[in-house]
Image (tube, rainbow, N blue to C red; front, side, top):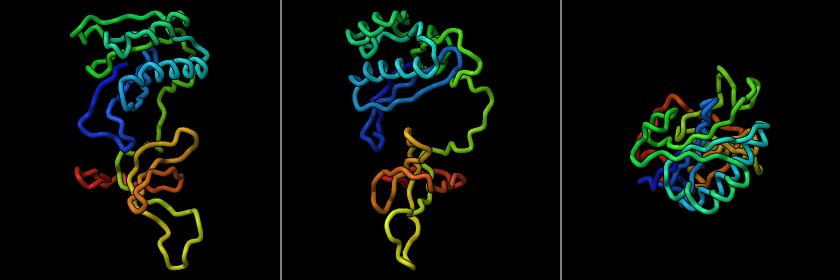
Length: 199
């Protein structure tokens, strides 16, 4: 896992830090966007509790760099109460991170003895619902009374997935808000061009 930022460009939620977590066993990765580094401890605590609950396995070890976002009283107490071992890499030695090659992946956690039927050990699966971030899309208007000859859709950009249901998160260029909708047609064949997307 690693926290990097602030980035030069903020995402739409005004978040400029990125936290990446990689499982040592399955190579599965999670990405979280943060406004400040101070959010790291609470996100990690929530993440560990959720992944343990969903996988019926315990987090045994966390391997990370020596950043203050990972070495603080909140995480020290949490890991001690859960019996989680913590391993730190020496400063400026990204090669000690083992599994993850890019410098941005500096922390790993390990779930030992995972079942092959585990939700994170998916094997070879196709994901046709995955769309390129920022691609233009057409959003079908399904709410309200539509005029007979009025527009039936809006234009926008794909910005993510809704975590609570099977819906896409899209930026509507007419209303200039982000909304969730399952009625979206992404134009993946159109390349994203710098300066053509939403502000």
